[in-house]
Image 1 (cartoon, one colour):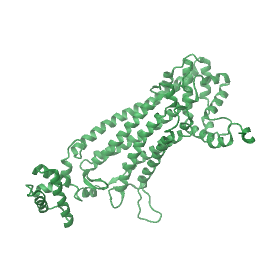
Image 2 (cartoon, helix red, strand yellow):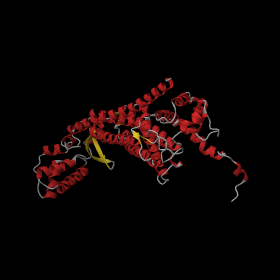
Image 3 (cartoon, helix red, strand yellow):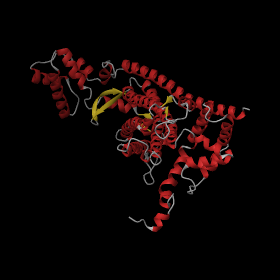
Image 4 (cartoon, helix red, strand yellow):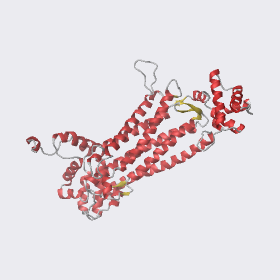
Length: 499
């Protein structure tokens, strides 16, 4: 087939390819990878000299060029097609500053864009992962701080969106705090699995030069090098695992936000956001719209959609170096991480500033017969009847009380017992009153994981211990990145100042 004359004469990059691919990729690379490229170049150059692959003088020339790069000028550059991408632009600038093209070209010894790319992707992602982890830790702290103040605060618990049983605010918030704690640990595991350095894998089979991959990994703050070079280039599980942990956090965040949005309805009247987190209406003067909670849910949903989009985009791509997982996809990963952080950070600050209507919640904890499970349990314990029979007795009482428009009376209880069990119960009126008391319902549930204040206090203590462990993990991880960066900078200055 003969190509059209115009198309056959068009040189790379074709205008359409430039407009639809290279320009956007260049813009994204400047935003996300400029600093990462720089760190990789510095570490690789130092390793080459330490291994005797380049001379000390050549290292000095290369480092001098690298530290002289004008990053602000690079960020201002518009894509004009005179270079393929940010990598090649940096090579051009390094060559200009180095003065000797042959020396500048030695920087690329024993490496490929392939292993550079997967390294800079990890450098960016691990920063985003730590930032999101910090926001998640802040959110959990808010849950635990509120729980620690409300061990005896009665609230109604719901199942299928209907009043179910009495609970406490501490138990309710602990449930969320535990969830976020697991999200934090999932992010930790993802970070630990991500924090291995692919540099030195080359295009896919490493190199014949005697490089030291462990040294480069150390200089860049990685735990160690990745192992199999093929997997180093081809694998995408480092970001899939991270996004999986993020997706779990976002699902939890959306579900939690929905709970508080329902509580903020005037019909529920259980939570009130301060003025800084609500908006009025342009026409209805009375409105206090809880928009912060709505934005939390919306941003979390947006971020979740992005994580699922990334996973969908890569699930059936070839196992090797492939553009599907590179320039066009990576910004979507970072956008998902950013939006996840926005949602979680906003949630922590919104909830920290909110106040609860505990009087309303306590009142509802005693309504709608939600404590009668304990009445059935009491009948089983006191009367020796099966739970099936006790359940039927109490169900008959509830029906009678609803028809009478009131509460369960002692007469209703005995009548239902005779009808169902063929005899009256030994329970007294005081026993009945205690059995349907929400306070008694809560206090008697001292089982591990239960709602009794003694148990929620124990659970808060455990979560506080985990909080300290996670704080220590986070400090170590962030300190490692900071220290490795400082060490690399000091080493560069030492090499530049040496004779």
